[in-house]
Image 1 (cartoon, one colour):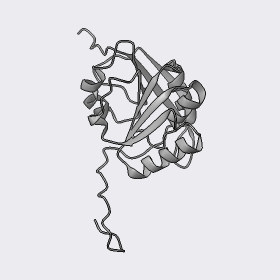
Image 2 (cartoon, rainbow, N blue to C red):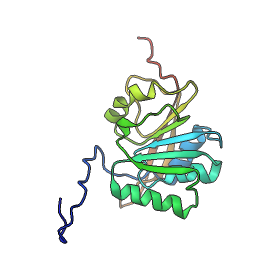
Image 3 (tube, rainbow, N blue to C red):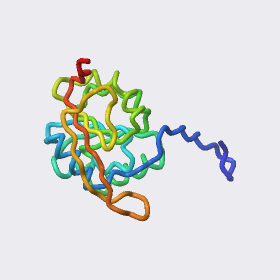
Image 4 (cartoon, helix red, strand yellow):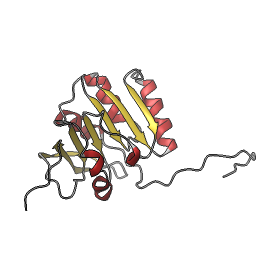
Length: 179
């Protein structure tokens, strides 16, 4: 790709999902149900503007790593980390979430479509026992969550009306229910 000045621009990666920000009320619930502490390492897959990682660092002193493919979201997330002065705790990387080694994480957060959650199962199965997986609105098909919470919060698009959001929690190891 060449811009109007004749300079080559890096190609924008194809994205599997559009950016939809998680309402802060839902972010707060996700962090609460994960029982975040300063000893946690939070991985946010599809981190968007970094709001969840910034909140985890500010409220709990947790370390975090965010991953996203969208260069605009990466820039926004890094700016939010810098603005909040939590760069010593949070890093943001432009990386395909399916290439991320999740084993250092104690908490993994998701706001992805169900089929993407299922594609992550091989990585999630490698998490250490008692690591937590928290998903906004979408479950992991074939795996019963430990619990589900309903949160009423405004939708991101106009008209910004309240709607039900769901927060799912699993504790590693992921286990398929007996049939």
